[in-house]
Length: 150
Ligand code: DQA
Image 1 (cartoon, rainbow, N blue to C red):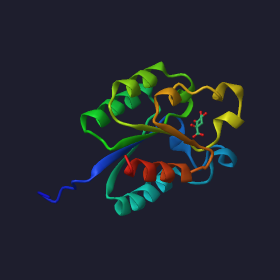
Image 2 (image 1 turned 120 degrees about the horizontal axis):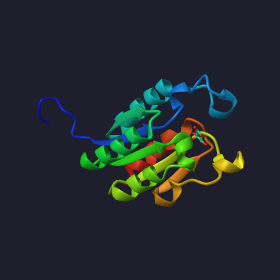
Image 3 (image 1 turned 90 degrees about the vertical axis):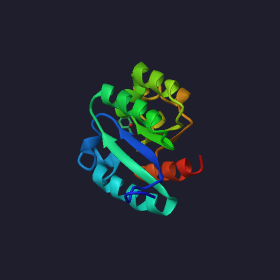
Image 4 (image 1 turned 135 degrees about the vertical axis):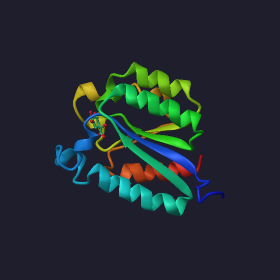
């Protein structure tokens, strides 16, 4: 280690539209935890796993595309991606995941298959390494445990 810099591999945790409102947005569906709460849990967990986490949120599709490219350029261990509603619409995110050589774990707090029809199709799922959904904030922690094994 030089200059006190971590040599741990990084897991990018990317969150899409409206996930900045976690905690106040439909808590009966998405739970009471804020994104900051989830970030704190993941940071604590990452220390025990020998990983670093880089947790980001944007309401803009292009930012998520750029961050997927950045994860590849940084040779990230994995990406945990909750693309929010873009899950169901974004060919750009589908293509970006396909273009990079980093495993992407798709996460959803809710279980989209048990909700409205328009949430049943994921454009992320066919290019993700796997999907974790329906377990609330715990899903992010399960994904981080999985990412450590890659
Ligand atoms: C979500 C599910 C999506 O259908 C929805 O648009 C979201 C959140 C989830 O975490 O359950 O914004 O990705």
